Image 1 (tube, rainbow, N blue to C red):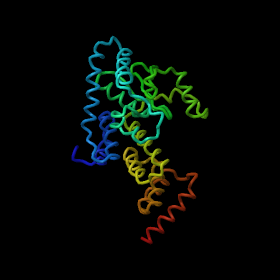
Image 2 (cartoon, helix red, strand yellow):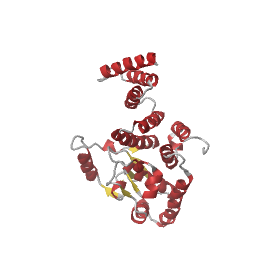
Image 3 (cartoon, rainbow, N blue to C red):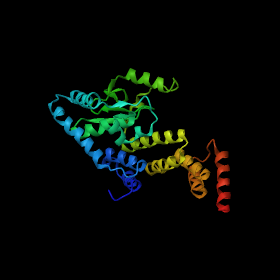
Image 4 (cartoon, rainbow, N blue to C red):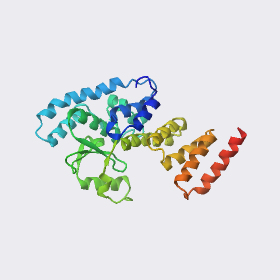
Length: 276
């Protein structure tokens, strides 16, 4: 795969069955498109090394809770992984190589490090797509939840309820279904969505478009992303692609609330196509 471009590699990953996806490699492929020339191998070896250091401790552990404690001790106490609360929206928090190098990240990328190191050493973990704050769960113990952004703090359900109340400012009510397991596609989509939010807030439209492209490789019928990419294409000089995306959006959402706005953009796109 080394001869492929990061986009070609990501397309291959997006087409794989979820059980076949190597999350560490996939996250590094995302970073490689953001950082041209990035060599994935040293960072995969970094994950391997962490797994090698953890494995003998896991063998000595008596049960899964001890195995989890060993992982948390290695990653958060010894390696010093922590949440980047000071600069949460730094895009480097979403690049796995930077997270491993700087030992700083956001919930989703810190969780990914836990998942990948745990997988290598035999600690059974799974991701939890909690709204606004990704968590990790001990697979065979559904009530053992970890907050990687807070140094691997173990959470009870009451902690999750309080976290949701704070994040949503009281607008969301806790439901146990919010603690469902997130698969590899969901995790990759969430990493990309974080980058999408960063670039959108910074007005970096040239960097936003490739993120939307990759989100649609994971889910070609995501109406929200089709709408956003269509608008971006129309406004940034590619009316043909913009019209195609907006038409696909209307096919998926036949009577959207913004139908008038989208209709106007389609008229503008077709006019620009005639001019060009």
